[in-house]
Image 1 (cartoon, helix red, strand yellow):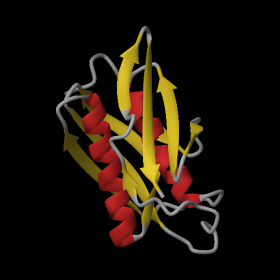
Image 2 (spheres, one colour):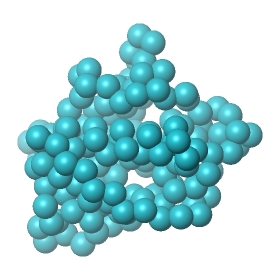
Image 3 (cartoon, helix red, strand yellow):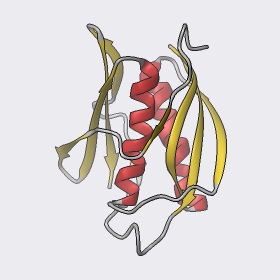
Image 4 (cartoon, one colour):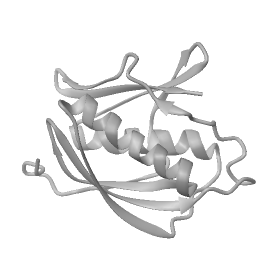
Amino acid sequence: MALAGETPHRYTLPEPYRELEHTADLGVEVEGHSLSEVVARLVLAEAALLAGRGAVVPDREERLEVSGEDSTRAALALLRELLYRFATARVIASSCTVLAAGPTGLAVRVELGPYDPLAHAEGYDLKAVTWHGARCAEEGETWKARVIFDL
């Protein structure tokens, strides 16, 4: 699961993503040169949706490890873990460093900051990370990921 020949890179908000129209749901697509880059961009896309246009000021850092049968399931597990932290502790990721990325597992270090009802008022009320249309895979020389969130 270690990054083969890669030095971990810290990604911070904002990171590029594209919102997808979906009935009663909201989707995002990201792409990058590696699984690590795509995973970090997925984490920050979810954070941007939660925070709206407001800045997230980190006050803690956590290391998270997740696994799944493939890279899509591992990425979904990570997003679900972060959405759980938002629902229970009201924190949003402000940066993501992928420490290890493999076909069935991910290890990341995320900086988290508190949800601010005023600063993050334009954020979406994400309820769940869905399986519908989810993917995180290499396509040619590019990695692409797509996730739909329940609103």
